Length: 286
Image 1: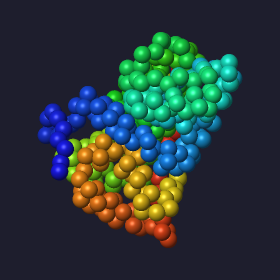
Image 2: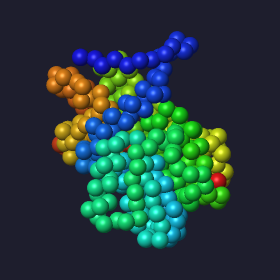
Image 3: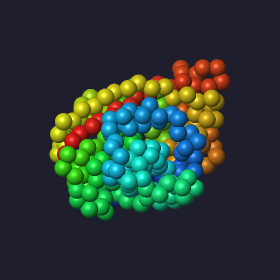
Image 4: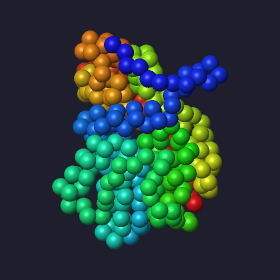
């Protein structure tokens, strides 16, 4: 079974329409939301730790967190700025926002609110925040420079942005996942996923969006999975291909699992896997 998507033709290449890409991300992350933290909470910590360090929060600051997911970074930012500060966290996925809102209520965190919003069209006032964050979300938007421009727009003069992205494709041992899924859905699920991970692309994108003093740091990481089931769960059910994956028949799911596990076989350690990865974290100032 293959799901079909609409494309337009440009110079003999199939290019996904931005509106379609947004829908895929919105409803795909709705599908992944219930599984996301179980598979990715600890795997993403190295990138999130560096992002928090570079943000250099001061108590009382106003923070916006773009593509916040279930709030893994948002809650840390709310703690860092204290009760006199405020965090507005946005995500394109309504389900992610629902989960994060419930968690904020359960934890009794009053200085944070979650809103469903497109990263390229923030419904927020100009110059209203001190810090803008985006932890591993820019790879999914059709126009990452536009999203960074929106971060620039909502920051006060002297405000800073910090964004984390996945690194180069050949430095991420799980990267065959996209090809494995793409050929089963007649489309590209995340057509430009690794673009910002190419040398200097994140810094250049921040410059193009109007930021100054732009710097980036690259860190290597290892994704630890205790079993084949955990590795497949993170790849398919809890990540960016979830929408396509949930449309597969059980037979196609099994075939995709087998092909993916073969692609990471070289990283097998005992019953589990230690898959290499790379993060790039950039910082810019208004």
